[in-house]
Image (cartoon, rainbow, N blue to C red; front, side, top):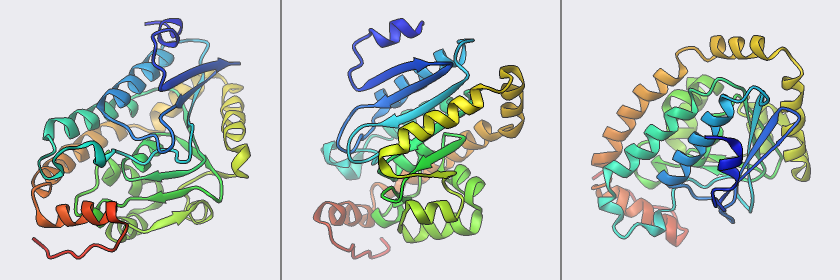
Length: 265
């Protein structure tokens, strides 16, 4: 598959641009850029194609709208308590492909990265964000186990102690707080997030491409396999928790914008 084919294939919710050995893939599902299995699979296919292109040395993942990505859109599921396990597995298994990309990825996080959206931001080697950005691993706050490989990726980036705190509380942190704990690498004004992400990608692209790729493979050695193992556990736990009263209460409270009243059942 060529970049021209991808660009012309009618994928209106994904925009692919390339300039000076840097490709930018932009999610266009505003305002919150909710994902589904189709979107993650297509992003993976695009990244795999770019990975094979000699004139692409780094990839920027960006988004349009208010949020970077708010994860899955639970409001479109007719029965939240019986959401098909195969859907979650398919999304997560497609996500593993993103961790096998050999070229550096920079996420341009201009808004909220919540739940699976945080997982998507963590496929990247580096994250560029702004003070207005928000990050939350809010799974436990809606009564379910974390997903999208976050139990492997978040501790790797910020340490097990901080990751556990974010998981258990579901708290939402600002771009400034994220920078302080090492969750993001570059903090700029909101209007400059995409430009700064592309500038970092261009800086990487100026290094020797074979050396960068081999170093990238060394630095991320074992990560995709670790994510794959974590996802197997995440899917298993999410499967039975979808049928709990706490999950029903958690998602209901989320829609009603109130604090949940969990029963432990």
